[in-house]
Image (tube, rainbow, N blue to C red):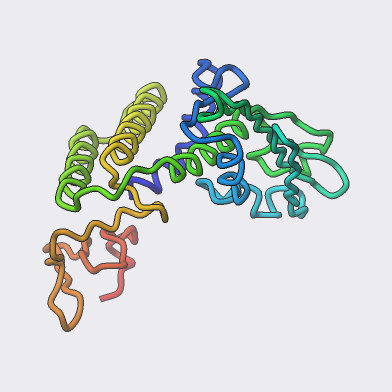
Length: 257
């Protein structure tokens, strides 16, 4: 639920980051403790469509046109060109410069809007700020995998995840915000907590290379071995059956008995 909510709110976060200058007002950069050739190889399978919201995968959002993604590379750059028919929707560019006598690489990224009309471009690629936010997140994900430390202790990782869950529950205990300003603040705070959690994951080696958190240090007690257990409140509107919604949104008078 948390990650779904975060994905829905992501455009608000990224837009705010771009406007406030957190993304450099139009650019992104990072120093990576790996040689340039290794860094470029790590980004060869980058696919922005894997980012929250699956940008560019729904042709109904771009006038029935499905975007085509082409990768072009030189010795010092990689360019992901997004085509809408015979026109360019957007070009996402990453440039690479060796540092520390070739032991590290300075990576910068920026976005150039193409000549395709908005009506035939996926929403995520109409705004340079939003595209850059998604692009930089995709690059960060690939580089984080490249620089992951050795796997961490499962018990330590489980405690980290439990603290993260407790913090989210505590943050949500105040209920829904009453204003747009409060909602934006809540989303921003959620993003900050998520970034801090992921940074601590990487430091402790808790994030696997497939992006999962498969610690499994605690045995699940959700149900018996012969099937899931469910429980209902006296009103019957809350269910704890795994795989089903916890709250039934159907009005009480219309529910099946």
